[in-house]
Image (cartoon, rainbow, N blue to C red; front, side, top):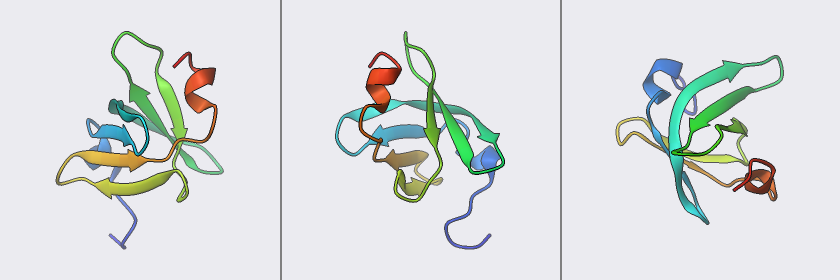
Length: 82
């Protein structure tokens, strides 16, 4: 694949880490919408978190380390009840 592109199957199960707040959860699925993909993050004892797969939100993907680093948009965690 081209740099910056990933197989969905390789991303399922990856840990999602926010660059400010730390560990968020793990990717349970990726929704393919018309505009952009959306990462569904399973969080322990909380509602799933939907994160847009955009360059300014997803800052790093390391499928070998099973880690996706994100910079969440302001207020996103609050919408989902932090």
